[in-house]
Image 1 (cartoon, helix red, strand yellow):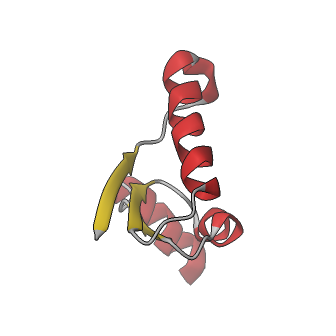
Image 2: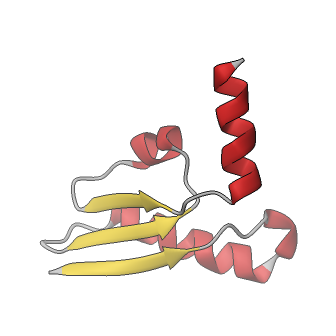
Length: 77
């Protein structure tokens, strides 16, 4: 079974919300399960690779239009 988990980009300065989200994420990394957890969030490819576990799949949120435009312009320059 695939289980979706939404992990929005909560900055550490928020406090409790960040701590809760991080605890859930760290627990999922340690979990051994026959289920696949699909993480929807703002993880970079490097973060996803570093955190990679066999039972996890990462689907990043698309960045905002200005963020994509800046990235595109930086690559084309």
